[in-house]
Image (tube, rainbow, N blue to C red; front, side, top):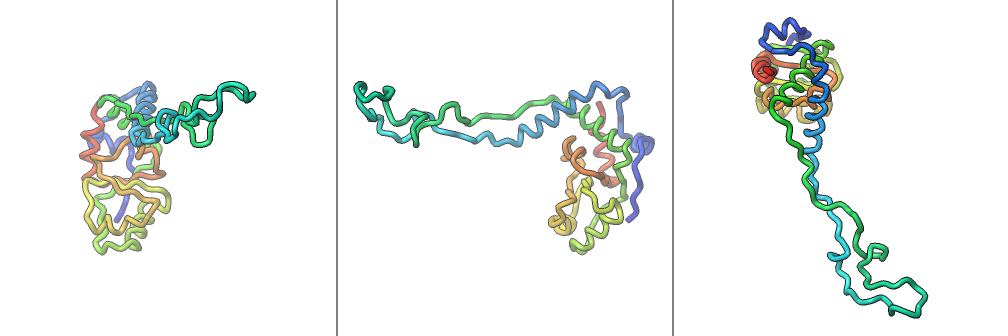
Length: 204
């Protein structure tokens, strides 16, 4: 299948909307990428405090006369098996970014990738035989051996099967792709069907 380099003019003809003067959008891109990465954090790290460890609470030695500093129990953080002072506790790392900011960041990132000549368009993409060898050959003919993000409106089960063992290529639908993924790959390959969906996502 043949591929063409997507230009800004061709993108506008495909009804992708781009804003002028996106210098102020750098903060939006930062906020969106930060939120996407923060939202992937589980926040389940947990340590026990001195009140939660399984210790008897028995005084380790008498209060006076030993020459040691007084101690009231074996759950102290300075003791082996004692609690942890200021350790991690379960928390929510998620961040909220409003829709307008997400759209602005997505639009600016996509425009920048197109302007850099890193985006290719194809009429469609399908691996009918479901073989990885066929998939690799098609991707090499389109974008070489670099890391590639393949964006389509949908994929067949055979295509997913053929691509699952290729670590340098990710398949994603146009309604799921985000700004971080657009930035993470060397080349982007977009099908004609995906262009219509992307056009609806670039309206700011």
